[in-house]
Each structure stands twice: as structure tokens, then as C-alpha cells.
Image (cartoon, rainbow, N blue to C red; front, side):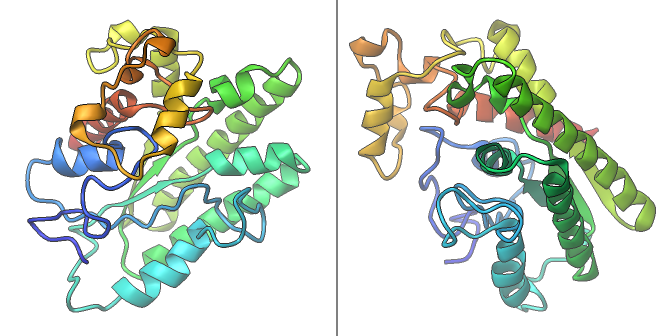
Length: 279
């Protein structure tokens, strides 16, 4: 099923399944912050890394990496396809990778040459996409997942190592975005600082109306995690589900589980990306 006006995200049909117990930022950008009809082709896989040959997904080789998504999904199905008449001027390519690479690298040999290999693969894939007609890119850096529950129990220097990895990756990604604009005058790369936005909310969620409802920004509730795991999709009536064991409703927790934020953060993220693109 391909996207159309009745179903702008195609297959799976909206709302589908997310890791946010509600719409994610892609959904919000498509259905809430759009100023006109937007067709969204979402190739994302949970647990995906940039290049399986450099850093493997902790979920195994069946997960489609960024490289796989370009070579196995985008290239054979959406290049010169008359049923999908996209052009460089009417399309935006959103790339959000690095989180699972941080996890995979931290669990494995965390060395600088490995990260360099990831960034090089990232760059090669952008070059390939440009050669196939892509012109507008939104590159999102890695949020401060060192503050997620999966890492928050770590003691320094291990936790600091994760934060340092993220900082180096984001610096290299910003350089990559700049170099892309210099190499291809017709390219328009937007670099979005996801890390800065998450940090603002984690430091004080009350400063923004979209996240002011958060009451817990440090931990998650095991009961909510178990409840979500029994469900394949979310339903609007359960986005504020409440279990007394957890103290507050599920959407008042920033973290749904050890790594993923709940939908209010995705809403705020989408709103800020929209502001960047409009500016």
C-alpha cells in the first residue's frame, strides 16, 4: 500500500506501531504540522544502524540498516518509478541514525576508527542519494541517550564514554552536512540539533507547552513497559493510560522504556523541525 490522500503514510496504515505509545515525529510532521498534503515514505526499522558491516544491529542482520534501506528499498522501488513521481525540488529526505550505532559501539570495541567508518558510510549514502536525484536533506543528530535509563545507572567513566561518543559523532555529522552543501551547490542540507532539544526538555520539561505535562524525566515504569509490549499498535484512548503502580499516567513519563521517549516529546520534536524548515 503506497501513500495517498486517504492514507498519507501508506503501509502500515496510520497510526501503525511506534515506540512512543502515540504518534512519532514522522506522524506529527505528516498529519499535524503539514500545511498541505504530504506523502510520507518511511523506511525506518527499529534497531537499525548505519551500516551492518561496520556496526551490527543488536537485533541481528534481519534489521535493515541505512545502507540496506537505500540499496534494497529506496533505489530499486522509488527511482524512476512513474507511480511515485517525486522530484528533487518537491521532496525532503529525513535521515536519523546513530542511536543504535552508539549502543552497538559501546557494547563492542568503542574505538574512533569504527565511528569514522560509520560516518564515511553515512556520507557515501548521501552522495548516492544525491546522484539519484535527492536534493533536500534533513540530518538529525543523536540525542543525549546517555541520559536514558539504559545508561543512567552506569557510573562514570562508562557513562561519560557514551556521552563522549555521541559528542564526537554529532560533531562529525555537522561537518558532513557542511561538506555536503559545499560539494553540491544544488543540495540543501538542514542539520537539526536533536541533542540540544532533548537536553532542554530533560533539564526542565515545563518550559515548553508540548512537554509541560511530564512529571518524570529520569526513569520509566516497568508496568507500562509490560503493558505496551502486549499491544501491536496504540489507540487514541490509551495514550494517557494510567496504572496506579506507576504513580502518573503513561504520557507523563518522558521515557516509555529504557531508550525511547513518549509521544509528547515527538510532538515537540516535530514542531521544532517544522520551524526550522519554515525559517
